[in-house]
Image 1 (tube, rainbow, N blue to C red):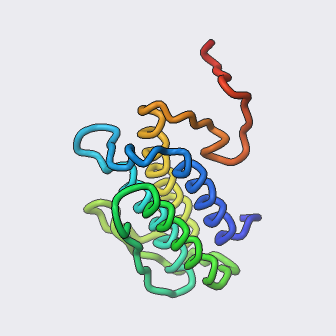
Image 2: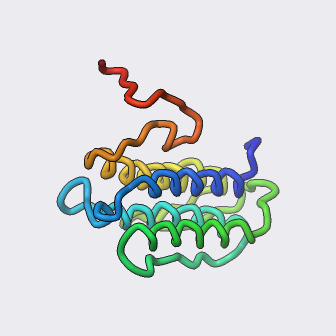
Length: 163
């Protein structure tokens, strides 16, 4: 990985803050479909996945963050708190696939080498929950773009590939 893992995760959190910052407070309890997590719970899960991925690489126990209250301010604060914690941790120098990390994926127990743990489990799960935040917001008409999601794409206001 050419980008240090910690910086990559901090960049992910910064983009999550961009998306969350554009969502009206009234939507944080909304879900994509009945029986699915709310927007704010997806924010919490996504941010915590980055700690779940990083802490085992440095031999630190994972302490998950919880929303202090419902709504946008608490969601933004949680992202900020996770970023501050992550930023204070030492940089991972190398990934060692001979060191297995054990975790649970739903009801399954998994054990993967460090790079597999990040690439096959942590990053896809982070992206899944951030995608749910994005999808719930877009379902409710929040004007988000791919650029809000990744920080790279740029489109003029009102642009659509479908028109």
